[in-house]
Amino acid sequence: MIDHTGVIVSDFAKSKAFYQTALAAIGYTLIHEFPAEVTGHTDVAGFGENGKPDFWISRGTPNQPPVHVAFRVDDRRRVDAFHAAALQAGGRDNGAPGIRAHFHPDYYGAFALDPDGHNVEAVCHRPMESAQP
Image 1 (tube, rainbow, N blue to C red):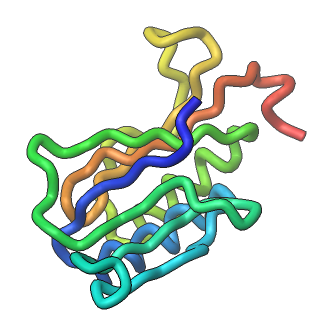
Image 2 (image 1 turned 180 degrees about the vertical axis):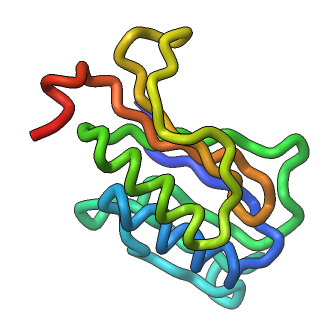
């Protein structure tokens, strides 16, 4: 079980705005933000749901190669909404919403590149009939 993860971003304000918009589509909000004066080294922001941040961004030199982060959702419409929101927030398309049968028959995912080129995904693993309320 993963407790939390994160990526390093080159433009903190731009990336924070990107993630606030893109992740809102899957129910995530900005929960905590700490400036370098508090952390002792860099600005950080934590996103999550139900008051628990599990995805963090921090200012610095982005990882090379870029990172891949996938957010699991229970509804295919949220995958679609994430992709649209990510593109609206300035992300670049890296795979439109759809079935990725090479992973498994019900793998419904969408991919966007964040401002630093990190591959961010929303994925629903539920069969079509149970993935839509």
